[in-house]
Length: 252
Image 1 (spheres, rainbow, N blue to C red):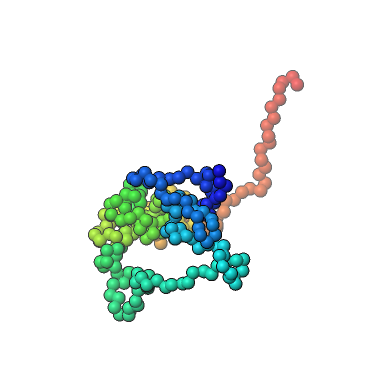
Image 2: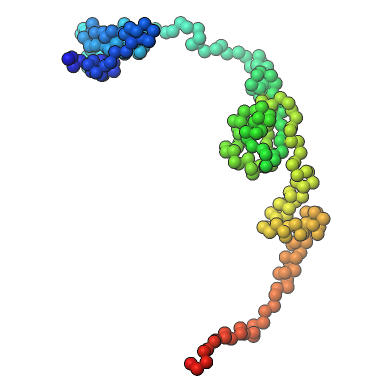
């Protein structure tokens, strides 16, 4: 049993199982001994690796004297490719570019304007919006800087990219709760930020008394704050706390 190994896959020839073609039931290729160095390439490597093995690989063992160190042979001469497909495209003047990427969509037509869609938290998701507008989900995420689908719950609106959606009409052009409700909620949030009050009921109380006039509600709250500072609660310094009652068991 020979102990030689294939110089390509480094497997002992005795351990290599020959492979056969499924159609012809013949062996893919026979083992080949190189004339330059006497090494062997197994048939499997010849059949499944690249075509240079059919002519013999570039052997690193010199067969004649060479000035290169470590006995290496000269590399093959460089021959530039003559294929026209590998040449870079010719440059064209800027005046000939009529359709810019900003104006052209995926199909080469002029891209439409982006469409504003008011979100419905109960039904709208990235997947449902992609199906309704026939827009790729990744395009929606990229256009609106949404890196995760669950971040959509914190938004009120979303932009539908016009380069994919050519309808130009929003399927949800108005807020779900109506414009008046959105204005009311916006005033409540602005009042809470201006007055630095986190209690929602207090904000609704002041705004309802001022008939949702934001400036009047803020002035009323600031006036109440000033009155409380001018009239602090008076506490008597002579008053003493009640004595602590002690319970005793009779007879002790």
